[in-house]
Every structure is written in structure tokens, then in C-alpha cells.
Length: 147
Length: 423
Image (cartoon, rainbow over all chains, first blue to last red):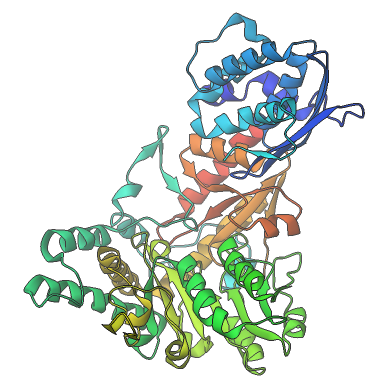
């Protein structure tokens, strides 16, 4: 059970049950969808980007606890950040969930996903929302897929 | 199959299961003797692929150790032995599905290729603009996409017979969809995602009354049920070796000789010809006309060994045992709070698909794996079924005759673990 609690930490279960920023954003100027065909997880990211800063971000969709919580925590972590900061954050987040980097202090709440690295099949769940976010940042209209 | 609805709460009793010595059978499967994450492996992903008994592994090893050569070519001793083993497997397949003639058995890579062969060869010759192909709402993607491709190429229309909330085919609606434009019916014997057993004999009869040929995707039926293609009277029947305890990469397509003879080859190459000049090629006779290139000989040999193994145990005994086990599992899983079974057809084989209120199927799969319980989660290559039932994914436990009531109890304990995590 202790192993499972490393993956399903309280904060993840909480964000799964009560996802934050789980809504459409009427004044979004960028949107993109992400899809994981392996498990059917879908996420749509709404982004308001102004002057190179993330002014607001939200998401909708359905998926497993890891993908939903990851999207939720991500939206909380991005507001006010520059595009370069978002990119850097994602790189460190991806390294964390792939087990390439020890937990670093500046990841904030995102460190709760450190347990994912023990479950390689779940890495895509944790990164789905981020891939969709980058599609939105790059202004891609097409849905991104994890495959 | 009748037992699946009579929910039992006690484990199948010894007397009723006496015809199958499961503990002894389990010793035939070396892979089952292992622990996963510290727990004994409970393999309940048999609808995805089945495990292999030692006799199948030995048959493949023996073939490569002693008999390996190309088939239908050499005059030497090894080629004779390889050809004998390969053609011997064809005869075993014929017997297994009670076809009338081994010429009606074509080796393919699996059920997917069997369906593609019929779509490419029979379909392209017999389906034209405005024609219709009828399938059902419970297909695996492999019995949807080849027909979509054919319809797109020919300007034909794919029609879909609906299923009800239990996952049973709506027979009246199916019959109404059979019309003058219908050129082929393709349907599963058993649904991979729901476990529904279709009344294939009756459905074939309905189609034949209108002179429409029927292909049956038997991938999920072959491991569980006695198959008699002459009794069903289907025109084509296909199934995969790896789902009947044989190697991957090989399967069989049965077709009535009268149809196969009129069909053009599927692929060109060696072995499917009688003579070749640059001006003209004369195709080989059945079944070789459809078997271009060097086949998966070792796979076919293992396939035959797997069918021998099933016959030794007895398909009737397997069906009876699995019915009891499915009824036991259905009652146990359905009794868990917050669990809903998807697919409650009157007749089922081998499959329990379920969703949980508190946890997504993917989370269920991860937690079950930590308990040593292997199931499939996701859309099971049947996305239209997921849409029909309004779920993004299900968790699917699928049975084989080597599974035990104790393993069902382990599944149930693991599902309770999911409930503990996702309170």
C-alpha cells in the first residue's frame, strides 16, 4: 500500500476529486486538445496569453486521476509565468516524472508527481495536459496525441 | 453459457468442476508460476492474449531444433518434415472448427488479416457503389476498419446493427438492415469488450435467406466455445492462434470452397502460383492461392499443438468450467459497492468489463497490477462500444480455463484496494 501512496498522494487524489480551474475560459486566446489513445484520456486547455505572460489557464476533459490531477496542478502553477519559464518548468517536470532528475525545490506542488516515475505506463498520463498546453502556446489547432 | 446469469455466491464446487483438474492444468503453463510485485500472478487478460502451455513452447522449439526448412519446396527430408508439420496443423484447424475440407483453411497472421483478406479479395470484387456492408455495434476495430476502407474505395455504405443496454444484438433491427443492397454481413461470435455471445446460426440463416454471405470474427469465441462452421453455416470464419494458447503472428481463415475458388488472390508472391511468365501467371489451387510467401511455419506448428492441447482437455469441459467461473466472478464483482458491470448479455463468454464510480479504469489497472492482478484497461480496440455505453474506458477481466475461483477472490480483494485509495 505504501508504494501506491507514493503514486496516489493526497494532493493528487484531492485534485482528482476537485480539479481546480476545471472550466472553459471565455476570454481564452489559445486552445488545444490532447488525447491519449491508449486509455482514452482527453484534455482541452484554455489559455489567455498576453504580452508573453500566462494571464489565465484552465482545462476540461476526462481521464484518470493522474492526468486530471496533473492538468489541475499545472493550471495552478502557470499563472503569471513567461513562456520561457513555462518551458523550463515543463522540462524539469518531465524529467521528474521520467525519473531523470531528483526532486527539485522550485517545482512547487508539481513534486507530488514524483511517484509517477515508478510507473512508466503512467508517464503519458502525467504529461498529457502539458503537451496540450504546448500545442496551445504554439498556436497549433490540431489535437495533440501522446502516441 | 446459460450459467452466467445465475449468479452464484459460492465458489464452483468440486463436484461440478471435477471434469477439469485446474491445478494440474496450471502446471502446464510455466509463465503462471511467478510473482508480480510480490504477489502470485493472477492473469486475467486472456481476451488480449492467452498464455502458452509447455507443449506449445516445446513444439516450436522442436520445430526449430529438428525440422526447420521451407515448406512445399524442397525434396529433402527436412522440407518434407516441415511441410508435414505445417499441413498437419491445417488439418488440426479443420477438425477444430469442423470444416469439411482442409483446402478451406487458409493460414493468415491472425483474425485481423483474415478479415482484411476477405475485404480485399471478396469485397473488392463483389461490392460496388451504393452497396452496403452490415456489421454490429459490438465490433472490435479489426471488424470495422477494413470494411470502412472498402466502402470508401467503392462508394459503398457501412451499416451498423444496434445493441441494447445489456450488450445484446437487437435481432429485429439487424434483420431489418438486411436488404437488397447488402453484399456482406460481418459480425463477432463473441464480443471482446462485452463478452456477448451472438446467436450466430440464427443470424447467418437470416442473411442467407436473402443470399447474403456472412463472415464471423471468432477471435474471442475460439478459446471458449465449440465451433462448428458447418452447423453455423457461415461463409467465412476467422480466429487467431495467440488467443487459443498458441503463438502470436498466425491464425486461420475458413471460407467455403465455393466462394474461395471464385475469389482473386490476396497477395502475390511465391507459393501462390503454379507457373509464372512475364506475360501471365497461373495461380495455385486452394488454399495456397491465398498464401503468398514463406509462411509462419513455426507459428503454425505451435498453433496445431495448442489445438491438440485444447482437444485433450475437451472444449465442452472448458466451456462448462468457464461458465461456472464467470458466474462466480460476475456475482462477486457486481456485489462490490460502486462497481458497475458493462455488458450483461443473456449469454456471455469469458469477459467481465466494469467501471468504478470512484476511479478511472486506468487507475484501477495500475492498482490491480500492484496486487499482481493483470487486467486490460481502456477502450479494448472497440471505441464505438465505449461511446454506446457512455464510458471513456472500462476495466476488463477476461478468463481462461486455467483461472481459479481463488484468483477471482484476489481480483475482488484488489478492487477493494482501489476503493481504499479512492475513497
